[in-house]
Image 1 (tube, rainbow, N blue to C red):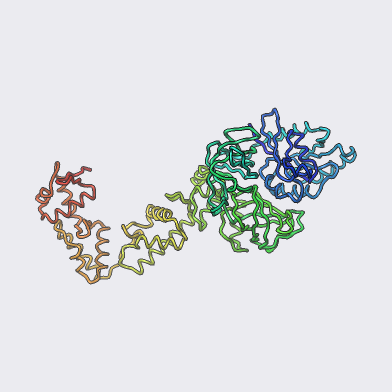
Image 2: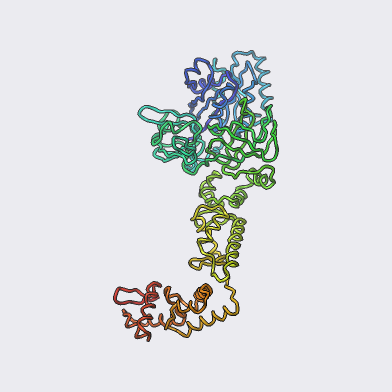
Length: 638
């Protein structure tokens, strides 16, 4: 069954609520004050019964200028608008304001209902219909149905309902994957015996009874505002009926367990973990309404409305000092409280004081760095976010200073992880590390150059060291690249090792191909030590005796490490190395035993002392060549 949400719009007292009642049978004014004053103050909700198989939800918004903030809490999630203009008054201030808001929010379809036709004569109505048609020319409502109706007499109500049903047969632009579920909360209350209940328009995804969800941004007692608070779906209602599942495009009431009413407010977002980004700063494309008589100056404070939320923010204009009517620019909005958003979300801004609607725009980046103004590279970056294809955006985002895992970038771009995996697999210029961090080729090259510079600097200062100590390298990378995640650092090192850029020396890391540069005297010492081990064969030399050959024990240790790396000697334990030839003789001896053998058997067959045999055999055990059962050993045939 297709799910459609309609929103009303129009000036106060133009008959929106009465028209909805005529279409649905439901009075959306539920507050005593609304009935007393005869105007809508809060959002109202209804559904239009039909035989066409559609779930048609209706959001009735306030028309009075004092309640625009309430209107904005509900209008953003609609599929199309039922724009109401009263026949006896025509185009009025909130007609214009609501129309500008709808355009800024990206609403692209609708029906115009000219109400109260019973209050005017035919000549007046004909003139009014012409005025309405002219007003909407050049907009998304040009050419859309204009239907004169009267809720009082019922004139054309059925015709309007038929047109609404026809309009419902449209492409579904909402995504229904469970991983994208989010519902901006527009009402919170408690019900006796049930507990906390929230309502909202389910704008993306699907949710089921029993699902775990998060409330973002969690602002309850003791909360930091960005981590969210966990809750569980206890029950679901859509259009007054109990159901196990709610789908994108439905007005939904959700009974939550594990969370109190005090922990949720209008403006919060109910979502699965990773479906939204909680942020205090966003990059946007901002445009001023053509009707605005105000100017936004750089660093102005404005009211920001997105989803059902409202926060104050500072506007940083990135390429100018002021933004006037009909102008558009890139800006960074620095929020005074966190919001839960997704790239591509639409928003509205209102002047700080007096609070009047002046513009709107689209979110380009939910987690940007703080920008300096009038920087060409920043504006070019925003051009990519605004106009570039998704692959260009992924390459750019993975090349920036902040490191992002695949699932984090998917969240930021409003994609499924599987979609992100596919996109990344099709881009040669993006590398996936073992911890799922994404790095562009350009960023990888900069990282590699940085690492090579660190190691080279260390080699220059320590010419006889076989490499930089591992922990020192990690510490320097952590400082240079602002990395606090040790798993990320190790993933980077692992990738560079696999790529052959660096080699692992155990406790140190060296550049591939690095060799210690010896003086002639040191080279002679190296040759002498190598010859000593060759001459000793299986009769090994104690390491401390070798170290005593030179006052600088550092050079001797460097020589021993290099000979071991070259495979000319093998480290038995801290006290002994053995020549490669000696190791092979001992290995051949072990393998010649047909079954179990003892230390004495090995000593006698090898023709060496018990002392040397006792040093060699544990090294074979450690290497997995032999297995020791406490009294004898057996060789493992490979």
